[in-house]
Figure 1: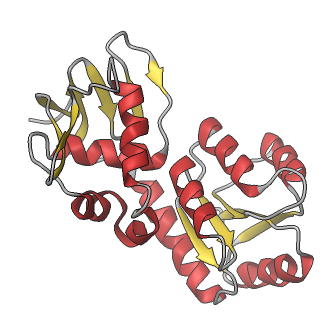
Figure 2: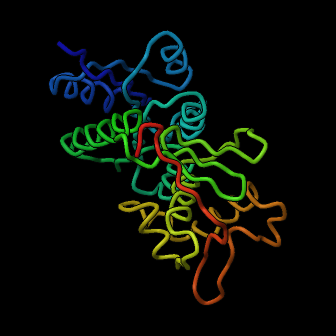
Length: 244
């Protein structure tokens, strides 16, 4: 018998947190509650959780700060619980590593569906098919698509957000092709694309600062005026050791 999915529910509003926890337990999940980020940090030091449900607006350390910490320290998926007027916070949350979001007030059934979807997606990452592409190499850089890591030509790990990773993966998959903003948004962000429509240029700017010797005169991620952007580098696909 497998252990139930263990959720850490972090929200400072007990009137939302407690009935939601009760509902999730009724759906077969194990749930631990935390009313603030400090309590959540303590719990995460002592226990392992399958997924975090994280409110953005909390007193003290907010949800975005905690999300950034979780993304940097572990591979635990995070779903943000956000208010209607927090569109920019949702953008930032997705960029720094959140896996999904739901907008309050939400139907608990939708949240359960999103939890299951995120967990299925996370479960697929460590066990790729034998012939699946494991990453890309370009101009000495390596993008590991299994561990979601970017390594520079000297072998040093370079921090990269989830949004930046998705964007760079799209560039590698379509190297040499000119992609306009709409194509980049659709390929990199899918359902959340509308949240990033004002941020795509900023993401590209941040990527250039990481992979370009001189981001003011980029030679890898180039702008094609009137067209969009292209990765102007020869890309080698890296397959798993057992692939043919």
